[in-house]
Amino acid sequence: MRRSNFEDQPVDYAAVGATQAHDLMTYPPRGFTPYEASIRLGSGVERFESATASLLSWDVLRGAGLDVLEVKAEAGQRYGGIRYAEDGTALEPIAVSGEQRFAADGTPYVASGSTARLRGHVGAFRMDERVRIVYVVEEPTSVSFAYGTVGAHRVSGEESFRVERRDDDSVWFEVRSFTRSVSLLYRLVPPLVKARRKKFTTAFLRSLSPLWSTPTA
Image 1 (cartoon, rainbow, N blue to C red):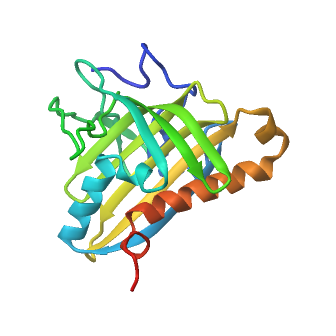
Image 2 (cartoon, helix red, strand yellow):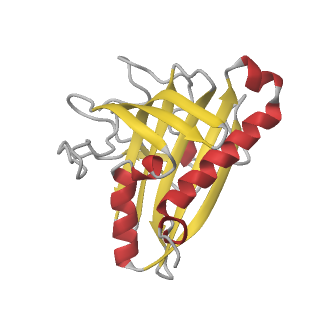
């Protein structure tokens, strides 16, 4: 089974999968800034299943205003990442199904090892980056995936998206990331990076929220 990043088109940072670390906000990869935020989506099995279907069909990105282009699936055996214990200890590799699934428009579902191009605007901030899915985790009460940047032009790093159904039956959506500036502008003006991160994360969270996605009367 393949581990870490991918040799044919590797991501542009070393700490692959670190968005799964429980202490990410305290001990991010060296040189990177962590960020996380979450929102309650509702409660119940139907809400959980609806949210996870949207998550794995790229709707979290499209709903934020981005175009998901040039989606290409990894050929052969795919890497699912590493499962971690509560204390952050690495456990076993995550089993990945070889079955390819597709969204209603024919776009392949999010799958570990696949690549895509994300392009669009959120407010004044532009994204046009190639990304690679570095892990997908599907469990009975939690579904998540993360992508890493490939040859980033603005910011480099990893971003994860996780939908969880908790013990009280509530359904939550969490976005986590760690990034570092690549472009000269962002390196010279650090507050722009923070503003960009907040803007994109808010858009991602709202993309799955019934409060924001459903028009009010």
